[in-house]
Length: 258
Image (cartoon, rainbow, N blue to C red; front, top):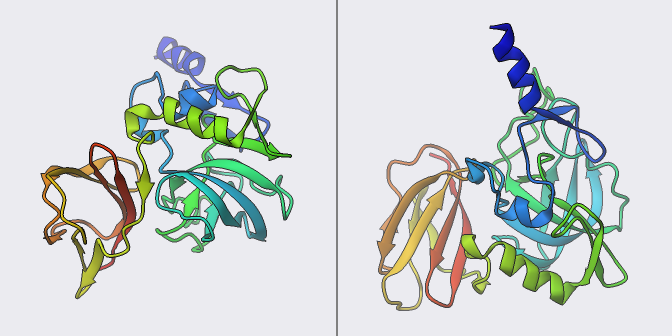
């Protein structure tokens, strides 16, 4: 038993700096590795969204961010999103290090609501359509004077233009489809008596449809012709629906509230 405990201790690393008081399993140390982890169960690390954002305000232990540019996921330029950090008991980055008006690149996960617990943050502010920023990897890059800076492909500081970074993101995340064009089709998600219904507004050849829960785990994966598809049988919560063709991709949040 003692030997097992010592081994477990060796296998876990305490992450400090831009972090919470958190114990992370072996985790990626560069941006590219965070986007495409070399470790098991990568769906727990890969961001649902990758944005350039400006901090507008502090909100308890989170922030409101204005999306300036979206490299991946559902958030669109001009949208204001809420991002939750750490209150002291979660494996998330602290967001209060960022000053109002600062611009950063953040890789975000869909919010898991972990702060809504008396044993963590003791609050009920987190909602399923919010986001969170993890600490177990490189989810935070600096942006200043047109340059993105951070441990991009190695553990040393690197800098590149926004255009170069967009190409890098496409390269690092090619396995998750980020290299494809991402767009919002406002007519492809609707609700009928609270039931989400997916339907593409334009005719397409059979495409790949993937619906993931807030943990990033696929709950539906199938070929689809874009016709009306009610999402029966899903538990209440926030999901991400994604459609991929050979040269285009739609991504949108889907809320199941019934």
